[in-house]
Length: 340
Image (cartoon, rainbow, N blue to C red; front, top):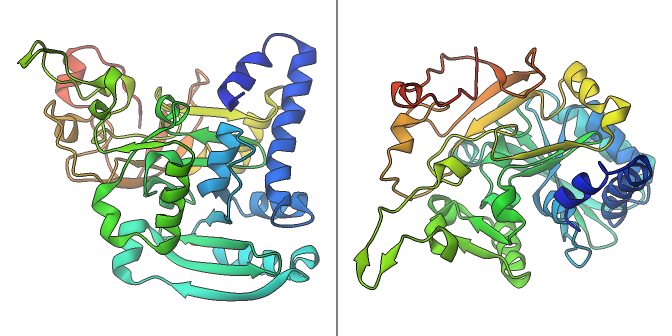
């Protein structure tokens, strides 16, 4: 049962709610337990410094696939909390005893700008596992997640919350590829993609690569124009953020006021986050790149500060620049995703 089904099932009654909530918590700690003997201590450290779990671990948590065991653990921290988080992890007694070696990997300016990772602490453990602590190039720990190799890895998990940017594709074992980043993939990136394919994931540049999104053809005749599927938040040129209508954002225990904790402590999906579009060669015929109401033309990502709006929906953000709604979408009554 994937995480979306679990969240729907736990809403049926209080007994199911308690069971599902415990199951979600065990799912996270058991996956972290493959790396460290005391996963709760690691979770506390990551939460304290506003960092997030991402990569293969976040994907396996979202899908709840037991056979999908991550080979390495990826943690993403903001540029101003990174050093303190690294010190806390390395000095943790339960982790120190397992450390075989650790090294700082500095990113070139070119890689830092493309992948939004300024620096990485690689901790190699005696059990053969590796922990990568990435320093975001911006104030948002989620920024490097937005530059993942494909949409299957644009997920996050924290002590209180979790998020998936493309649930419609991810739960169907599909992912849109950031093909413009292929020349800059690391060996770990290639390894992760190989593992996706081994678990029957399908990778593509356009949603129309899959039958249900394909253009309507009658023999060799095009019956209707090809859609970019913006209305289902699948267009690769579309501006996206965790909390829009195409994403999945949830909390481990909503009745325990976990959402309020995230709002108060600026933890994802609130606080310093990111708005992005895929680094892809896909050419949208519907003009999503220059008519988008979230990102301006030519902008691939910007850090933002998300706050909860008075209506309780995650649509309010504060940015360092003015975000205008395109007249095209205003004229059709399309609701704004952001308000300044």
